[in-house]
Amino acid sequence: MTNYFDDKETISPEERENDQNRRLSRMVTLGYNHSERLKTILDELGVNPADIKSIRDLEKLPVISREEVVELELQAPPFGGFCRNDADIDRIFISPGPVYEPHLRENTLWARGYFAAGFGKGDIVLNTFSYHMVAAGLTFHEGLRQTGATVVPAGTSGTEMQVRLISDLGITGYTGTPSFLMAIINKAEEMGHDFKKDFKLKKASFVAEPLLPRVRKTFENKYGINTYQMYGATEVGDIAYECGEKNGWHICEEVIIEIVDPATGKRVEDGKLGEVVVTRLNDIFFLFRFGTGDLSSIIEEKCPCGRTSYRLNGIAGRVGDAVKVRGLFIAPTQLKEISEKMGDIKFRIVITRESYKDYVTAILELEEGEADRVCHLEKRFGDLFQRICTVKVNKILIEKPGTMTDYKIILDKREWVS
Ligand SMILES: [Zn+2]
Image (cartoon, rainbow, N blue to C red):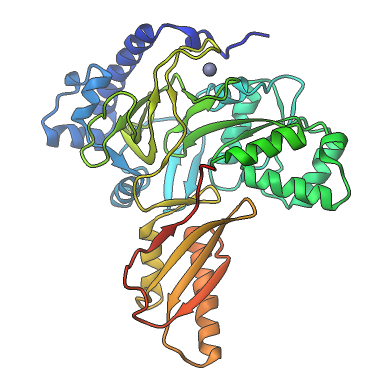
């Protein structure tokens, strides 16, 4: 068994930069000829494709946020003009927005992260990401397969079923969110199992949700599960992953990361905190400088694991108001839609953490009325919220109109660092 997924992970940073510059230059030329959107962007800015020769030149292009991608896709359905017209796309994913993404076929997609986490031949891995519409389930599945592991497409089945699979199939690894694994462990204990003794599940690769240090400690010390983190976005695929050192996340070889000041789109000083902006080098989808809205900084020091890529220093928080709840984004635009659909009702949502899970409280401004009417409105709000944001509200509170003076539609009260 080798230590690295491929040779690219150990080339010198200079070699990597030269290689990425070459691929970037090629992608811009290709995109200019095949993507209406990129052609429009460059023409409007008066930038010639030949002007983008290196990572530094990317600053000539605008940062495009998730919300802008949604808007551009609405203007030019389904892919906003980013996608090559003659591309051979094997599948199209849908995420809340709705946003459509062509599957970027690449056999390294997510595989580096799983490989670095020790997944491989002989492993039977429980993949608890949804296989329905969204990219997660299938893409992680294929990433795992690239390492040689066998995958059980458990998806979002209930915790009791997951415990059953872990027990019956001799599951050795888990991929999903940390909160769901904790829920599975709790269920197993409730069912009378000793998780550490009874089961073979000894490693977990988490994505789509932060892993709190104290939660990590519980997994590792109490349950004997070696935990790893990966980081990515539906629009661009995998971005970074943790190695055995568990000190920063290695940037994937197929992406260019810039850390920028969200206000200007210019790169911040080395090592400083800024927005993570991603360009995925590929031949199908010409989305340059995707603004993740996540805050991080770069670690340039060489990692003892031998990989030479720079590392992201975790995620410090969110730039804008869009928040990730249970692995899914809730954007202000979605909340505005709910408000409109309910006759411009005023409300805000507060996100907290309750026993390892994101907890969503909605506070609605309503005139006091008969209990029946309020009950009906609460139900309608709950249903709309789940349909539009694809996340369930845990609690609905009613307040009198005028109570919300400091009006912020999303209040994120979660604390990720303990
Ligand atoms: Zn490393």
